[in-house]
Image 1 (cartoon, one colour):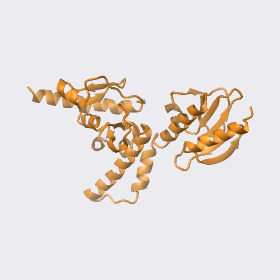
Image 2 (cartoon, helix red, strand yellow; image 1 turned 135 degrees about the vertical axis):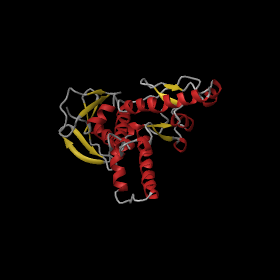
Image 3 (cartoon, rainbow, N blue to C red; image 1 turned 120 degrees about the vertical axis):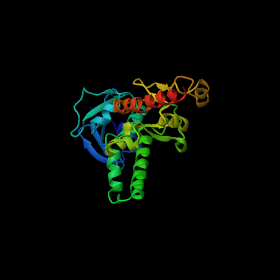
Image 4 (cartoon, rainbow, N blue to C red; image 1 turned 45 degrees about the vertical axis):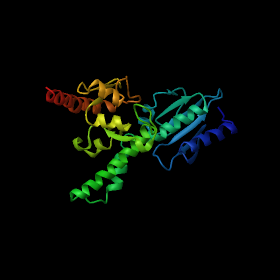
Length: 263
């Protein structure tokens, strides 16, 4: 299998355009790239039939790319954990862009960024601890913006200034910084959805559907835009434990308290 000059040029351009701006030469028929902004390394090649292949250094990123089939019919270059196959260059662009986003947030990239940024910050006083927390919240928001592609996980709203980084298990209830900075412990939400989710008036079921608290009246649901079926698309296995916590420890508790208070 030999890559034509034109195909090689297009592969190189696609890699650079999606954040893999460090060329690492070749490994057999594979073109190798890294990124100055993400920890993922990639290798690209093409078949004589025109199929395009991307090999990835991080297995957890490959596992999150479930919209593409795994290319198992060809040997991987040294250092690669898995490969994905796509049919054309627009699909390759989407694949690499998503791989870049995931590598900057999975599995513990946010924690590592947070630890680097706060290593020299004191934590002796409440004011100092709050300053550290603000850094963590900024890192967490940036990670959710990457993971959810800058869009509300429910509505698709793509106005960054309006989107909220909503913890599923609240910052104060997390036992470790690893939990607080876990990208699976958050949803990027429009302001109204963030408010009701944070207050336990809405939760997310195992299949991604939004469940509204019985404590909210029909009129309140209508005014909040919750009177129609809504769901979160793009949930991963990692979200499951946190959403189970939210349903049990916040949603159900708040519903019971509000309903008891109304009697």
